[in-house]
Amino acid sequence: VMPKPIKIVEADPERKSFTYNSWHFSTIERRYHERGLCNYLPMTYRSQATFYRKYLEVDVACIAVTPMDKHGFFNLSLTNSSTKAIIDKAKTVILEVNKHLPWACGGYGELVHISEVDVVVEGPHEPLAVLSPVEPTEADKKIAEMVCEHIMDGSVIQLGIGAMPNLVGKMIAESDVKDLGMHTEMLCDAYLDMYRAGKLTNRRKSIDRGKGVWSFGLGSKDLYDWVDRNPGLASYPVEYTNSPWVMAQHDRLIAINSCIEVDLYGQVNAESVGTRHISGTGGQLDFITGALMAKEGKAFVCMSSTYADRRTGEVKSRIVPVLPPGSTVTDPRSQAMYIVTEWGMVNLAGRSTWERAEMLISIAHPDFREDLIRHAEKMNIWRRTNKIG
Image 1: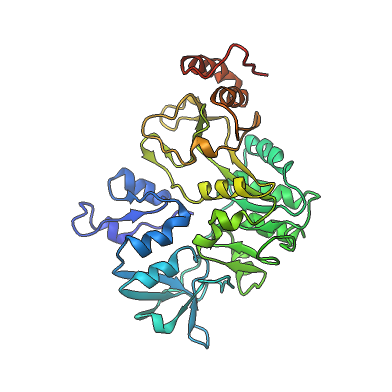
Image 2 (image 1 turned 60 degrees about the vertical axis):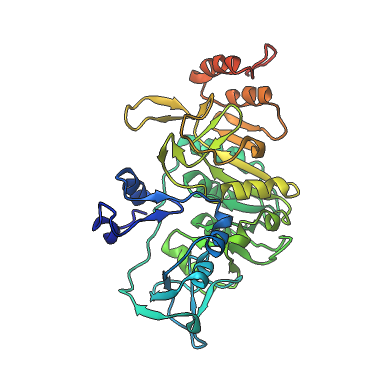
């Protein structure tokens, strides 16, 4: 999705009257940030509602909703998230009605009553933004195949954003596994693929049995049609979907996410390139924590082993000795579990620093392994008994 330019930001390039902040950057927000027109607000996604309730003032909340039903309720549709907390905190609540938005069943937190609202506006009823599928690379395919080997009957699946997690979902749809569950922050088309293939039943979940749980949705028109008044899907606030204590009640919780780079200590950066901000913390750490707590839970952080520098064209390793200055630690080394590249998969949980160095170098691109070993020696996390093979 390429969001439209935000007119009020464009109209005030010196930021004399308007300051734009974002919890999670999109393409347009990255461009604004590079121009000094947008700031990032750091947070883990599960804490967003808490931030609004305890620390942030909201003068006006303007929220897109479905048309009102006969009982006086509007539906938050594809964005349960922390929206109700924002509405509860706002001094003035404005709802913009869009007839194209699907009606999402709860869960809870998906409804706004007319008595809570100050102004209702009939918008232009613009068609909903759709997320175009990203063509997976050969590396994505190899990674997805390795991850799929760990998915068993009755697993409860969380998929992050990106080509590779969606590819895992498509491969699951073509596999022999059955009776899978869904507990995720983001509802994407991969879940629809699994449902249509008869794999996603939610009937073996420990909690929310029979319901696919989600907090916000982004995908195709088919996905939005699937959401509309579907009692098999349950929309919840993000403080529920992303609570590790809720997730931990699910046996066989499988969290699948991607990242930008990992250092030899197992620190994961999923949101910046040095000081250049790319996205946001989101819920990755929430789900890694939940998977670590869950019985038979597993968390996978996936990446291609290399990338081409967008400015120089130079091929660089995504496994690095240490994260570059200014890089964000999205997942601390203390929470590291499975790291996956097209060269293999390693589980860092409970491993020492020298063991981690050996394991991570073993899944780095071969062209960079010797250099990584030299750095590991200087960092005193390489032993003469270490082996790469």
